Length: 284
Image (tube, rainbow, N blue to C red):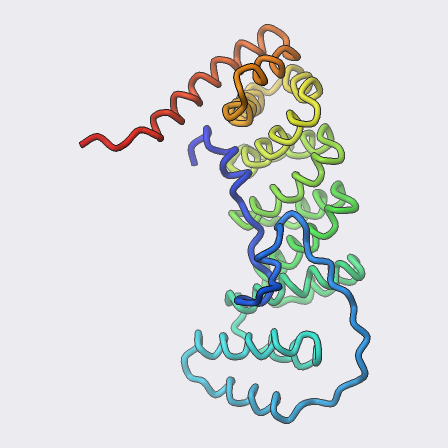
């Protein structure tokens, strides 16, 4: 990933859909920054449905693994509200690590975390493999970030999650953390090892912080001692400012000391040039 495009990464990453596909009320159709709050519906106890059991047995007999997983997953989603025990049983029949099973795990993790985070974490630890555990923990962290973003961040740090899924969750958690305490969010992401996760996280924090408190963001940047992190924040700031009006950029940069303002201005010119080159029609 090119260093100058991490703001795009930070703004473009979306939380992986964790609800039933092709439903009008699916969280995938909602704001990914606001995990769905599931209202617990009190329902009378329900006996196992013979028809549902027969459907599950039929689905298990499908020979093609992908088709079998899709059929079992549909049954699980349909049973989530009325027969959660059957839904869990169906989920257990899905191929470990399959997309259908991961989506169900993510959805269940969020629902359980809305009720009790500690119980959700205990459940996540029982899942079959590290990838499924990471999928659950990531979505528990998303729920937790609304009330306790620092704990959510620490949970992610301890989880060992890596790769794009980690970037997705980090950007979402940092967005909520930066809205509450941008300095703490910035200090946390600055501890990341060099790489795309740190750059995406810095872009997320800087883009939010400069809108809320440009003087605070620029003061934090000026105090950075690590040259690499300083360079990443300057690129993030340039990407955050490039779409602003010239007068707005000038007002924001008035908060920076002369040295930092010169560095950001130089980076802005490079960012604008790159943006202009990308908008040019291809040469024929």
